Image 1 (cartoon, rainbow, N blue to C red):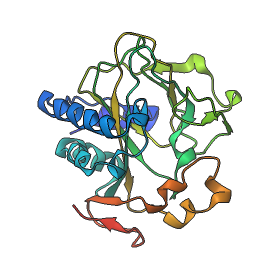
Image 2 (image 1 turned 135 degrees about the horizontal axis):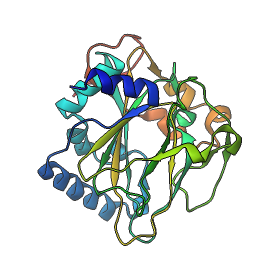
Image 3 (image 1 turned 45 degrees about the vertical axis):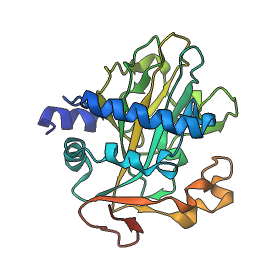
Length: 254
């Protein structure tokens, strides 16, 4: 379980690194699953935004009981998994992720998600580790983003530079198998990978079921055409724990 100090750190800083390491045999299985995904979809060599839409076997890795216990401490006993992504960042040609807030992209109301970030490789400054702006989640507001269609970026929404101070950034240094958890409003990004080592990671997105994943909102091209998220319109929402508090989520039970 997370300690009281770790929970307070998550609330204050917007992220926490628990005392956890995914077993090596599970990491090996994730690597095998990712290799299989890339053999069928080489276009995802840098980033697959929704791996469960292509291979639901990844659900096994998102259902670790210890991780679910952490989530229950942070977002309550009733929650669902609504997405999992794979950031591959291959050696020498790993794309950068611009400074952003995750919630900028998502048709969830009220906006709420805790993201679990699982390192498949050691993640450090040399290979483009994640970077956080501590406390940038505290006002619970989406800040101003601009469209950036640079093909060498994993995402196309970039936070306006006036919205944050990059000198406040902290590097998320993780060993293979470690995880971090971060808030939906936390400002973060990462540099490109020009090193000789890959920087692979899975993200798992969990929302409390007091929120609604709005499939109809996702179909609204006026809201989401530039964000390229209308692909969320048919997204499965996987029940993890508790009940659907909202009563409006179309949950898929495992």
